[in-house]
Length: 78
Image (cartoon, rainbow, N blue to C red; front, side, top):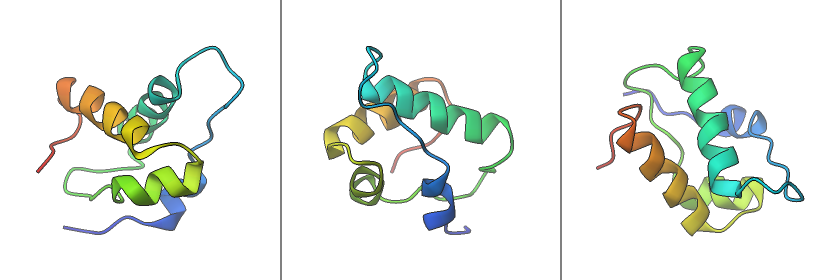
C-alpha cells in the first residue's frame, strides 16, 4: 500500500463559516479526491489526527467524515 501524506491535505479546503457541517464538507472533499482519481484503491488516508490538525477541525469531525465514506463504500476502515 502506498502512503499518502501532506500533498493530499493541501487540497482539502473547508469553509469554517459555512452553514454546511464541517464533517459533510470534509467527506465531500475526500469523495471528490477519490472519484477524480486523486486517491486510488490501496492508497492510505492520513491518520485522523493528522487531517484534523492540518485542516483545523476536531478528530471527531474527521471520524464522522470517514464513517460516511465507509458507509458509501468509498473507503475501508481497519
